[in-house]
Length: 215
Image (cartoon, rainbow, N blue to C red; front, side):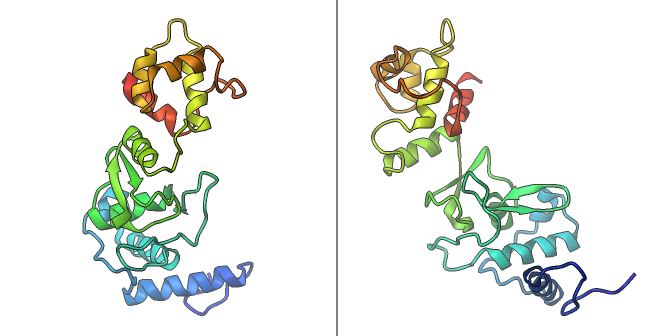
Protein backbone atom coordinates (compact mmCIF):
# COMPACT_ATOMS: atom_id res chain seq x y z
CA UNK A 1 0.00 0.00 0.00
CA UNK A 2 1.48 3.40 -0.97
CA UNK A 3 2.55 5.71 1.83
CA UNK A 4 0.69 8.99 2.34
CA UNK A 5 1.53 12.00 4.44
CA UNK A 6 1.86 15.79 4.47
CA UNK A 7 2.71 17.05 1.00
CA UNK A 8 1.98 13.70 -0.66
CA UNK A 9 -0.76 13.75 -3.30
CA UNK A 10 -3.44 11.08 -3.27
CA UNK A 11 -5.10 10.08 -6.57
CA UNK A 12 -8.70 11.28 -6.80
CA UNK A 13 -8.32 13.88 -4.04
CA UNK A 14 -9.13 17.46 -5.03
CA UNK A 15 -6.58 20.22 -4.55
CA UNK A 16 -8.61 21.73 -1.69
CA UNK A 17 -9.01 18.34 -0.02
CA UNK A 18 -5.27 17.67 -0.41
CA UNK A 19 -4.42 21.03 1.15
CA UNK A 20 -6.79 20.36 4.06
CA UNK A 21 -5.23 16.91 4.52
CA UNK A 22 -1.69 18.31 4.51
CA UNK A 23 -2.52 21.05 7.03
CA UNK A 24 -4.40 18.66 9.29
CA UNK A 25 -1.60 16.10 9.20
CA UNK A 26 0.97 18.74 10.06
CA UNK A 27 -1.14 20.02 12.96
CA UNK A 28 -1.51 16.51 14.35
CA UNK A 29 2.20 15.75 14.04
CA UNK A 30 3.28 19.05 15.57
CA UNK A 31 0.66 18.96 18.34
CA UNK A 32 -0.18 22.57 17.49
CA UNK A 33 -3.92 22.98 17.19
CA UNK A 34 -3.95 26.80 17.32
CA UNK A 35 -6.90 27.00 19.71
CA UNK A 36 -6.88 29.80 22.30
CA UNK A 37 -7.86 27.40 25.10
CA UNK A 38 -6.53 24.10 26.46
CA UNK A 39 -8.52 21.08 25.29
CA UNK A 40 -10.15 19.39 28.29
CA UNK A 41 -8.62 16.02 29.21
CA UNK A 42 -12.03 14.42 29.46
CA UNK A 43 -13.13 15.38 25.94
CA UNK A 44 -11.79 12.24 24.23
CA UNK A 45 -13.65 9.91 26.59
CA UNK A 46 -16.91 11.83 26.15
CA UNK A 47 -16.62 11.66 22.36
CA UNK A 48 -15.42 8.05 22.39
CA UNK A 49 -12.23 8.93 20.51
CA UNK A 50 -8.80 7.34 20.70
CA UNK A 51 -5.86 9.74 21.25
CA UNK A 52 -5.12 9.67 17.51
CA UNK A 53 -8.76 10.35 16.62
CA UNK A 54 -8.88 13.14 19.19
CA UNK A 55 -5.80 14.80 17.75
CA UNK A 56 -7.33 14.66 14.29
CA UNK A 57 -10.67 16.04 15.56
CA UNK A 58 -9.00 18.97 17.31
CA UNK A 59 -6.88 19.75 14.27
CA UNK A 60 -9.89 19.67 11.95
CA UNK A 61 -11.88 21.85 14.32
CA UNK A 62 -9.07 24.39 14.54
CA UNK A 63 -8.73 24.38 10.76
CA UNK A 64 -12.35 25.46 10.16
CA UNK A 65 -13.25 27.26 13.38
CA UNK A 66 -11.64 30.63 12.57
CA UNK A 67 -10.51 31.04 16.22
CA UNK A 68 -10.52 34.64 17.45
CA UNK A 69 -10.99 36.25 20.85
CA UNK A 70 -13.38 34.81 23.47
CA UNK A 71 -15.94 37.56 22.87
CA UNK A 72 -16.04 37.27 19.08
CA UNK A 73 -18.05 34.83 16.97
CA UNK A 74 -16.06 32.11 15.27
CA UNK A 75 -17.92 31.45 12.00
CA UNK A 76 -17.59 27.82 10.94
CA UNK A 77 -15.86 27.57 7.55
CA UNK A 78 -16.81 23.95 6.94
CA UNK A 79 -20.15 22.35 6.10
CA UNK A 80 -23.28 24.23 7.25
CA UNK A 81 -26.47 22.16 7.46
CA UNK A 82 -29.79 23.62 6.22
CA UNK A 83 -30.78 24.55 9.78
CA UNK A 84 -27.76 26.88 9.89
CA UNK A 85 -25.50 24.89 12.24
CA UNK A 86 -21.95 23.88 11.39
CA UNK A 87 -21.37 20.13 11.23
CA UNK A 88 -18.21 18.05 11.29
CA UNK A 89 -18.26 14.40 10.25
CA UNK A 90 -16.35 11.49 11.73
CA UNK A 91 -16.35 7.81 10.86
CA UNK A 92 -18.92 6.92 13.48
CA UNK A 93 -20.94 10.12 13.79
CA UNK A 94 -21.69 13.66 12.66
CA UNK A 95 -21.46 16.33 15.35
CA UNK A 96 -22.73 19.90 15.37
CA UNK A 97 -19.60 21.95 15.88
CA UNK A 98 -21.01 24.15 18.65
CA UNK A 99 -21.54 20.98 20.72
CA UNK A 100 -18.03 19.79 19.87
CA UNK A 101 -16.62 23.17 20.90
CA UNK A 102 -18.41 22.93 24.25
CA UNK A 103 -16.97 19.45 24.86
CA UNK A 104 -13.45 20.54 23.95
CA UNK A 105 -13.57 23.34 26.52
CA UNK A 106 -15.59 21.76 29.33
CA UNK A 107 -15.05 18.02 28.95
CA UNK A 108 -18.74 17.09 28.88
CA UNK A 109 -21.74 17.44 26.58
CA UNK A 110 -24.06 20.41 27.17
CA UNK A 111 -27.04 19.26 29.25
CA UNK A 112 -29.72 19.13 28.01
CA UNK A 113 -28.65 21.14 24.95
CA UNK A 114 -26.15 23.74 23.80
CA UNK A 115 -27.55 27.23 23.21
CA UNK A 116 -25.82 30.11 21.44
CA UNK A 117 -25.50 33.23 23.58
CA UNK A 118 -24.77 35.13 20.35
CA UNK A 119 -27.74 33.62 18.46
CA UNK A 120 -25.41 32.92 15.54
CA UNK A 121 -25.97 29.25 14.70
CA UNK A 122 -22.79 29.05 12.61
CA UNK A 123 -20.65 30.27 15.53
CA UNK A 124 -18.41 27.65 17.15
CA UNK A 125 -16.81 29.78 19.85
CA UNK A 126 -17.13 27.59 22.99
CA UNK A 127 -17.46 30.69 25.20
CA UNK A 128 -20.61 31.58 23.24
CA UNK A 129 -22.27 28.25 24.05
CA UNK A 130 -24.26 27.78 27.23
CA UNK A 131 -26.28 24.92 28.63
CA UNK A 132 -30.04 25.40 28.44
CA UNK A 133 -33.41 24.00 27.43
CA UNK A 134 -35.36 24.51 24.22
CA UNK A 135 -37.74 26.81 26.13
CA UNK A 136 -34.98 28.93 27.70
CA UNK A 137 -33.31 29.23 24.30
CA UNK A 138 -36.55 30.38 22.67
CA UNK A 139 -37.32 32.89 25.42
CA UNK A 140 -33.78 34.26 25.29
CA UNK A 141 -34.07 34.78 21.54
CA UNK A 142 -37.54 36.30 21.99
CA UNK A 143 -36.24 38.82 24.55
CA UNK A 144 -33.39 39.80 22.22
CA UNK A 145 -35.78 40.35 19.36
CA UNK A 146 -34.64 37.40 17.28
CA UNK A 147 -38.21 36.16 16.89
CA UNK A 148 -39.90 39.61 16.82
CA UNK A 149 -42.96 40.42 18.90
CA UNK A 150 -45.29 37.96 17.16
CA UNK A 151 -44.98 34.20 17.16
CA UNK A 152 -42.61 32.80 14.52
CA UNK A 153 -44.27 30.61 11.91
CA UNK A 154 -42.80 27.35 13.25
CA UNK A 155 -44.26 28.12 16.67
CA UNK A 156 -47.64 29.02 15.16
CA UNK A 157 -47.69 25.72 13.25
CA UNK A 158 -46.93 23.81 16.42
CA UNK A 159 -49.54 25.71 18.42
CA UNK A 160 -52.09 25.05 15.70
CA UNK A 161 -51.16 21.34 15.74
CA UNK A 162 -51.74 21.16 19.51
CA UNK A 163 -55.22 22.55 18.92
CA UNK A 164 -56.12 19.65 16.60
CA UNK A 165 -56.34 17.28 19.57
CA UNK A 166 -59.66 16.83 21.37
CA UNK A 167 -59.08 17.84 24.05
CA UNK A 168 -55.69 19.56 23.57
CA UNK A 169 -52.96 18.03 25.76
CA UNK A 170 -52.22 21.51 27.17
CA UNK A 171 -54.59 24.37 27.93
CA UNK A 172 -54.39 27.62 25.98
CA UNK A 173 -53.07 29.26 29.13
CA UNK A 174 -50.32 26.63 29.48
CA UNK A 175 -49.32 26.90 25.81
CA UNK A 176 -49.30 30.68 26.02
CA UNK A 177 -47.05 30.52 29.06
CA UNK A 178 -44.63 28.28 27.16
CA UNK A 179 -44.22 30.86 24.41
CA UNK A 180 -44.59 34.01 26.50
CA UNK A 181 -47.90 35.13 24.96
CA UNK A 182 -51.42 35.53 26.33
CA UNK A 183 -53.71 32.50 26.33
CA UNK A 184 -56.17 34.44 24.18
CA UNK A 185 -53.58 34.55 21.38
CA UNK A 186 -53.41 30.74 21.50
CA UNK A 187 -57.21 30.45 21.36
CA UNK A 188 -57.30 32.74 18.33
CA UNK A 189 -54.89 30.42 16.52
CA UNK A 190 -56.97 27.39 17.48
CA UNK A 191 -60.13 29.12 16.23
CA UNK A 192 -58.49 29.97 12.90
CA UNK A 193 -58.73 33.72 13.48
CA UNK A 194 -54.96 34.17 13.20
CA UNK A 195 -52.28 32.19 11.34
CA UNK A 196 -55.04 30.59 9.25
CA UNK A 197 -52.66 30.23 6.30
CA UNK A 198 -50.16 27.90 8.04
CA UNK A 199 -50.50 24.15 8.29
CA UNK A 200 -51.01 22.41 11.63
CA UNK A 201 -47.85 20.43 12.19
CA UNK A 202 -45.04 20.38 14.76
CA UNK A 203 -42.01 22.33 13.57
CA UNK A 204 -38.69 23.80 14.65
CA UNK A 205 -37.64 24.41 18.23
CA UNK A 206 -41.26 24.84 19.32
CA UNK A 207 -41.96 21.10 19.28
CA UNK A 208 -39.03 20.56 21.67
CA UNK A 209 -40.54 23.08 24.06
CA UNK A 210 -43.90 21.31 23.94
CA UNK A 211 -42.35 17.89 24.49
CA UNK A 212 -40.47 19.22 27.53
CA UNK A 213 -43.77 20.49 28.95
CA UNK A 214 -45.48 17.14 28.39
CA UNK A 215 -42.67 15.01 29.82
